[in-house]
Length: 25
Image (cartoon, rainbow, N blue to C red):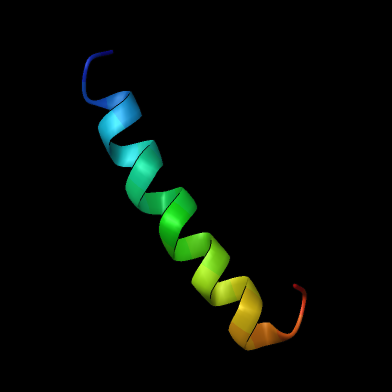
């Protein structure tokens, strides 16, 4: 449960970039 926040940060950062490219903003 210690690697969860570490992975979440990467996913959240990538999700924002992915959403922007999709035009979801």
